[in-house]
Length: 357
Image (tube, rainbow, N blue to C red; front, side, top):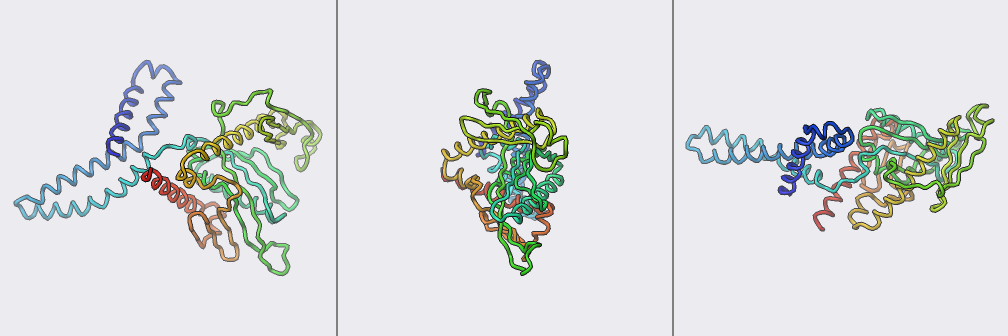
């Protein structure tokens, strides 16, 4: 591990030097590439240097244990007692930093929430989840932009899609994909019985042009009048767009915007991200069991979490986490605790896989 860290530091110094090279500084595209790679190594190098400095201090303190001066020996013992506990956490962090990077971690996210079993109650839960992620995005300083939605008469969503952009949203949210189940008493339930319904959540990295190659002859594009809420101007023009990707059979519909061109652009963005997700899932299936375990199945049919309102309880079934603060989680303010626990768990699983390879 340490020789690998030395190589990372060497590369970091090379990149730092390149950023000062006039030929690189004068080429915006090249400079951006170098700066991005250098920034990606900064945390690893800083942690490595801190770890190495502590090791050197510890070795110096241990040498003082043989000093003839008793006061010096006592001071050395105190310093050793202070320094030794700092090393294991740094070593664990360095191991995580050296794990193979998910190439999608830096990307923005296309978030899809769909109502599943449960009728109106499922659509209302989809709206709850959308607000939860919206508020969580606000706490992270991210930007959330609606892409398309299909609302219900009771104020819920059959489906809602949005784009989340900011600092590494995919790295943070990628373990949210799957079936989210809710247990609560619907407002329309006169007998006070608890109903169970579910929604599926899909977190997909935003696809860039270099990620997915879509040819015009692979697309069938239909335009028609929008339906549902949206006002007279929406419903009287052919602004809705349905795009069918012929090779895969994927269909994307976007009708939220009054402009056909805007709906077409958004639909293409959704299509590209879904195709990238499919390619990523295929690639994950071909990697080791440890990799598949790390990302869960990535399958939207996998039940990952239960939200129990009567008990104010949230349970993540993959990691065995139960918290009695559902009100905070569903408000978005407490979601970070669940996400952080999932990230730590799956990183630990990936570390196990690396050590057994």
